[in-house]
Amino acid sequence: MSKLGTGLVKTLTLAAPILTLRCAKNGSLLLALALFLGSCDLNKEAVPPPEMIGTYRTNDPRYEGLYFRIEKGMFDFSTVEGTVETYPIVAYEKLDRTNGRRKTIYHLLHGKRDGQELKVSFNFEPDGGGTISFLNRPGTIWLRESDAVK
Image (tube, rainbow, N blue to C red; front, top):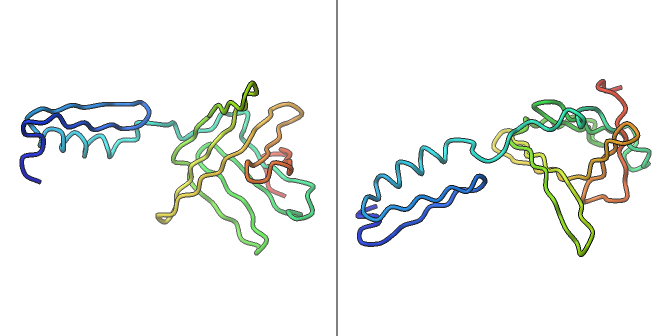
C-alpha cells in the first residue's frame, strides 16, 4: 500500500465503542493503529449477567432430554445426536428492539471455537426462576432448572 492518505482524509471506524481515526498525510500511522486496535476486543464484555447463569430445559417433545446451559465464560447445549456442543463466550450483548410502541430486550451470546462462530439470540425473563425463548423458536419456552445437567 503506497501513499495511503496522501492529500486525502482516510477514515477508519471500529464498532462499539465507535472510534473514528482520521489521518490526512500519514497512512502508515493509520495502518499501525488499525492493526493494534483490531487485535483488541473493544466492543463487548464476554460475561452474561449472573441471573442468566444456569441450565435450561423445555417440555416441548421435539427437545425432550435436551438442555441449553449458560455459564460465566461459556455456553453449551445437547443435541438430538447425543453430542454436546460447547462454545467459549467471546462477546455478550443486551439489545433493545422497538416494534411500534412495544419495546423488547433480547440477548445475544457470541461463541467461537475451532474458527467457527455461533450467535445465539433469545429473550430472557428472570421471573419464575428464569425462562429463555430463542428468537428463532419464539413459542418454545426453556425453564431454568439448576446449575447441574441431569
